[in-house]
Length: 230
Image (cartoon, rainbow, N blue to C red):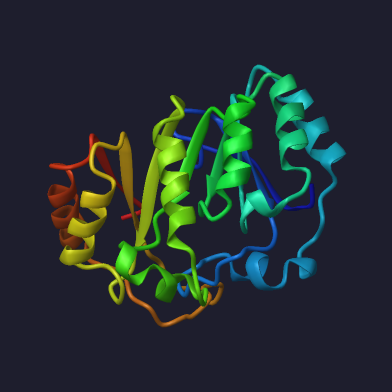
């Protein structure tokens, strides 16, 4: 697996666990508000980190770290993802996967083989505007819907999450997403922050008051609703 970044300690990426985070390059989406545009568009410009370096670090941190988060880019594009996860689990770590859900066949295999402990799937927007936000012409929404189903029925811990951008997220979007994900275990509203690393700089965040308003709408449909990054 090609690794383009490695954070040796995080208290945020894996809920409830002290973890390390592995970043993969490349993505099959071009979301306008993506904050990892370098990893998505020009991953070859990022330093490649060898698997042996990561495994060596994890070996030394046994009993201190509890989990490994694999994020991107989009990890399910990586040929060696399953083997990498197996090795991480052999070292005694729980594994969390971040995904956009567009490769349900890969997700299915990982779930069937019992390789995941936690999945975090990005819900980019409501169904009506998905292709627009993802920058994918001819986007097949059924692939997203299948991944939602797989995660919900997997039995593992999971969350769905949306980065809340003023230009794309409003009360109607919150209601539509809530209806779509109704009954799900956990949904996180993530505050947007503009920067030079964003795919299309110049977008705007919602206020803390607006975020709380959306959370109140969603709490009637989803078991646990979180606000992150305010």
